[in-house]
Length: 145
Ligand code: HEM
Image (spheres, rainbow, N blue to C red):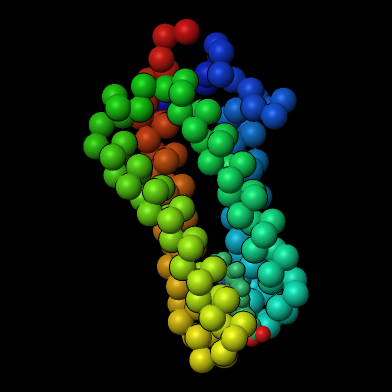
């Protein structure tokens, strides 16, 4: 059962941490899908601008996630804790791959297909990190205030 943080560490950028995190995460997923769609439609200018906005949005989402985690005893959530940490770190690091292959695609279209496949991998890793992260928070008890 989800327990809500009530004590300190409950706000970031003036927003309560849990709704702030959920909102930022959903915004990041919508932006990521828009990046994939504009890439697929070869709308280069929109694609590149959306990449920048998505990376900033991802950074803010990670800051909210980190702040949310402070209120919970995550280790007590069990095996899902290291599994989620591994997936979250891998997903974040994996964002370098579409950046590198995207720049290669700007230079030569022969990278486009690989870039598209890597983009799908990054999206799948992001979703896996989200599912395991939600599972972890649902299992974790709140730390005493
Ligand atoms: C600095 C980062 C990036 C650059 C420079 C870049 C650049 C490009 C370029 C030049 C294309 C080809 C468009 C055309 O044909 O005119 C493209 C396609 C695409 N991009 Fe990116 N991109 C970047 C990041 C991303 C990210 C983060 C994603 C999603 C996670 C993504 C997903 C896609 C997809 C799905 C396609 C279509 C591939 C296909 O149709 O096979 N890109 N990108």
